Image (cartoon, rainbow over the protein chains, first blue to last red):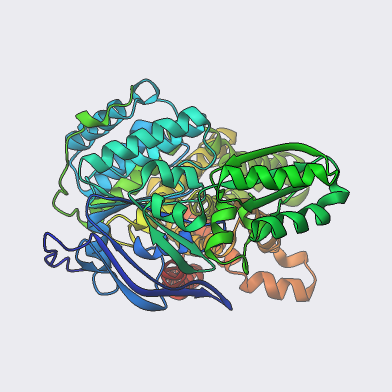
Length: 329
Length: 265
């Protein structure tokens, strides 16, 4: 229970993970991951459902014991001083961890009191947080009547009662509408600007792209790439060509032609007659499309775009192990 | 507009005591009464219905007159109320887990048993409130505890002990079972036979031998006998001792199990 002094030097990372692993029965959810998250950074863990993102986060938040490996969070050892880690972190889970029967204000007062604030201090902190998170009007309503965006904001507010060294956010915008998502993004940026280190998980490439200074891509419990969003995209290729065929029966023939022309793996979309392939340049894409049309293959639609998460995976795993049905969600 | 730039940095205050944590969880239980008064309705509706039905429909046939039957029945229905009540606290725990609320509690640097202590505080309140309501209705219908205030107070202390002991069964269930409704279904499937095959409603003298043998050792019967004795002023130390066997045994066995399950979850 002894918290002990943090041994964090100014240049030490906020989070240092070495070989962290955890299995559930025969399934290896996290299979030995290394991470270094510098202080004050927004760091994203990108991966499909079931990649091990949540398991990794739950281990770092002391909710789950690792089977192997070690980690320090703000200088505190995860295994030896979990209580000290808890004093330095906050976690906002995938599902709002709030008491739905209580009001927003009561939730915040309750959690403040659990941290050890006195009655008056707890009430003041709750009021400040409600105002800062644009929830003052809803403060006295039961949380079960909150919208998804309001819940998420209250949940994040609940993580800031004591300013954490590290804030873990597990899929902070999953299930939110675009405007609520923008709001949460803005909030995360502000928090990072105030010096809080943020480790978030996401299955949206765009989210990682928008927020994170660094991204680790994980799949099947392993880290398969890490870098800035620019580095990852460069590794994936600059332009992806997406083609929707008018007739699904032509799928095989078209795939063969694209592969021959562009010399890269062609992915079949999860539904419909959709093919995706790395084209490299608009000119190359144009040539390939012309060839399809010349061969009498009707196109319903085509586009050049940034790679989807599917395609990042495809590129990063060399196409051998693309978790198509998982990433399609 | 969201403006978290204005939010002050807040340092961690001095760590609170475990007791203070537990009281906060107790406060939460009180707030729930305020926001969800219906839950009280759930708690007392069944016992009120039982009291009225058994007293007026079966009472005359079973004991000669409704008044005499109420005198017999009321201490027992208090036991049933508290035992059924415990199911709801298991459901509450299961709901908290399902909603991820416990994840929040567990990432706070608080005493890890505090949430359970808080649940217990809430349970005790629930048992007290429900027990008082049933007693009040009994008094209105003509029930008279011969042992007076002291006897009733003693009976309520025993009642809380029973609730505390039986509560562990449902905390364990709440930790093991994934959905709150399953906790309820399992709970009542187990509790209905156990409370009916007891001496709460009828004297077991007319039951077949095999059933009577069970009824006589059924912990619910032992609890009911002691409750009757306390409220009538005829209780013996042995009766109280027998009534406490199950609550004590359950606490000794299931409290550590609750902790293990919680830590592993």
